[in-house]
Each structure stands twice: as C-alpha cells, then as structure tokens.
Length: 83
Image 1 (spheres, one colour):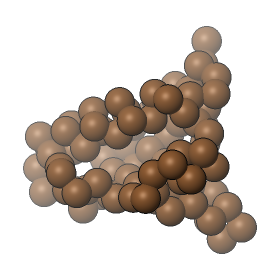
Image 2 (cartoon, helix red, strand yellow; image 1 turned 90 degrees about the vertical axis):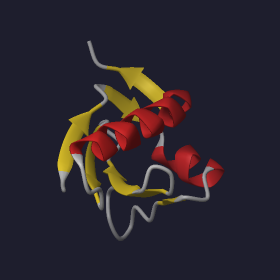
Image 3 (cartoon, rainbow, N blue to C red; image 1 turned 135 degrees about the vertical axis):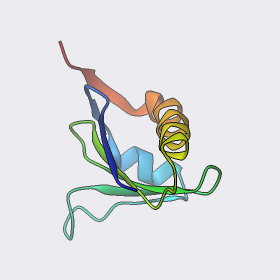
Image 4 (cartoon, helix red, strand yellow; image 1 turned 45 degrees about the vertical axis):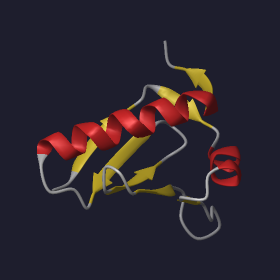
C-alpha cells in the first residue's frame, strides 16, 4: 500500500537524520529523507516541505499508525508552519 500525507510545515531534514538512526538523508543524491519505521512497519519518504510518501505497509490502519508515529517524532524538527 502507498499513501501520501502533508504536515503543512517545513522540516529540518539534516537534524532529523543526524538524531535518528532510522533516517537516511543524502541531499546530493535524493531530496527526501528515508525514514524506516519498525513498529509499526513502514517506510516514509519525507521532503523538507513536509510532504511524505508512505510505503511498505499492508493495511490502511498500518499507514495511519506509521504516519502518527512519525508525525510525533518530527514535531521537534519543524522549522516553519504553513499559514
């Protein structure tokens, strides 16, 4: 299953990837950070404009759980909230 979401905020991907082992960010190769969630299982591609793509989930409930889990973590890395 694949889903997209928007946090409506700019995200500091550099510090997110520095602080979280489960996040890979190589801006020279790809503009998004790759966040691997183990529980619930899923992979998110996160862009600095707050847009996300969720993959590797099996159900809609899993998508919601992954997005809620990651949104809580990323709240510390919000640079600017959209108005």
